[in-house]
Image 1 (cartoon, rainbow, N blue to C red):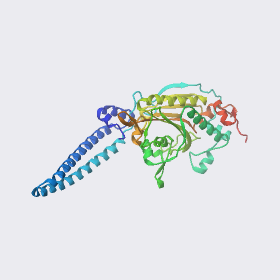
Image 2 (image 1 turned 90 degrees about the vertical axis):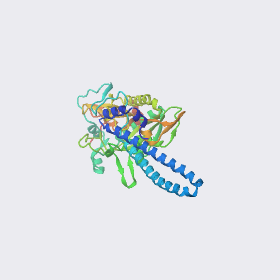
Image 3 (image 1 turned 120 degrees about the vertical axis):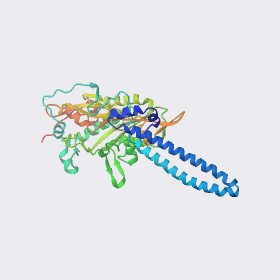
Image 4 (image 1 turned 45 degrees about the vertical axis):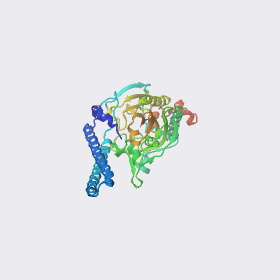
Length: 421
């Protein structure tokens, strides 16, 4: 089952409260309970009729000739009734399965209720830069000959870009440092597919309310991923995992694609909100009871990366209505964006509890049988980090300070300098 039906039966009010905190329909809980009751009663009737059919079938060979015809007629009637009952049970199961995909994951205790602006700030780290003149990342990037959005639009349309020269090197430096950080923490490095099957995309929860953000290749019935989380969640689909030595952790590097539907007019300048980018994503499979601690560890590695990039940032506890369907809790790290005098999301880490694993059939074996595992994900580096790095480390002459952690990937350079026109 996609959801824990036992929980819905035993504590429906908790599920209603979760739906309410997200600003989503509570009536689906009653619909689910009704569908579950219908499925169970239909199945019971089917099994009762089938048992009676089998019982009479055993009597026929032993029956006297005058009784045999009557028994045969009765079993023929039962056969028809059994087929009808089986069809009714199958329909009830299908209805239950359909409804079970409607509710979002159960929000964990402590998550703020409300929408996008109802987050809770956990902490702020670092000092915001004091700048007499603030250039935005595009002006800085064009001065460095690092970002070319004009030719990106010419080749591919709006929200596309070229990274050239030090821009391309800077992206690779950020991503390589992210991957090195993950590997040092014990993650297995993975280059993932960027096209996935519908059952994998749907299993991770990305074909719900935000399905219009996803690119689909109709000719092949495949989806382009917006994060390697999707492929990594599907990596162990249908498998029984051995977690006796601790969580299974993967760091996926992939190109990512997002349609940005509904974002008309938002962040149209530069490379903040684009259709294609690269990302290193952490993904973890663990025991359900260990998920909260694992979530804290993922956040810790994200903060380690932000510290390495020498960026001022804050951590927020995302409100229930802004979690996305699969997350039970999510922490975002946002870097300061001097040109817009606001915070800019750079990383998210989500505890999806057993929501994705139930959909994808990822389990572990216990003394009492098998059970779903928990899945978690977290961003470690993306193309967007270039925005924060350029703006926070800009110098009065348009050059850009290179954080010490990135210098080995950039030939030891301490400064990125503008290219003379």
